[in-house]
Length: 178
Image (cartoon, rainbow, N blue to C red; front, top):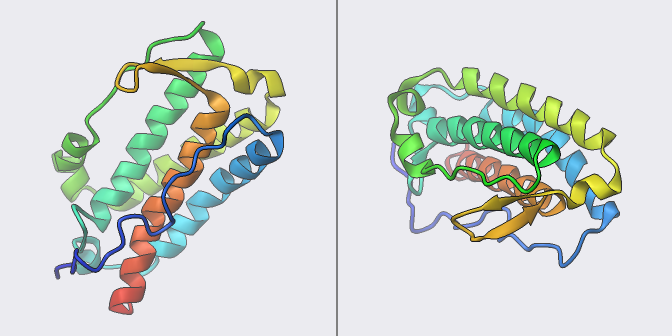
């Protein structure tokens, strides 16, 4: 099955709009958005078979999107912990396109990554809920962006990121009436 990539929206959840400054109301909303992502993903993939999992949304198949969510959330969790325990750590960038091409991203059971995604976000949400407002000012240095990224901004980015990729799967479900 192929996807009419010219019809699929680039940003099914809208483009990312960074908050101008730390806002603890937004921080709380983003934490809740992260907490709800595993169930939203499970709902989006419920009942999909191999043909649907092999369907592309632009560049990646549904299976690759699910594995990407686990990969990126694992990176998020590690970077978050570094920012809380080190002073302005430099994080290692990774090539998400090449990660998506690895054999396990193409062929492995997608439910393995759903489990990783769920467990990682559960830990991260628990940690974030226990943090003080000042903790969200802690940051890591991202060499590709050449800047410090505070945790309140990272939280906003990943709340959007999960909605973006799950939105891709939801768009396919709607488009193909799965």
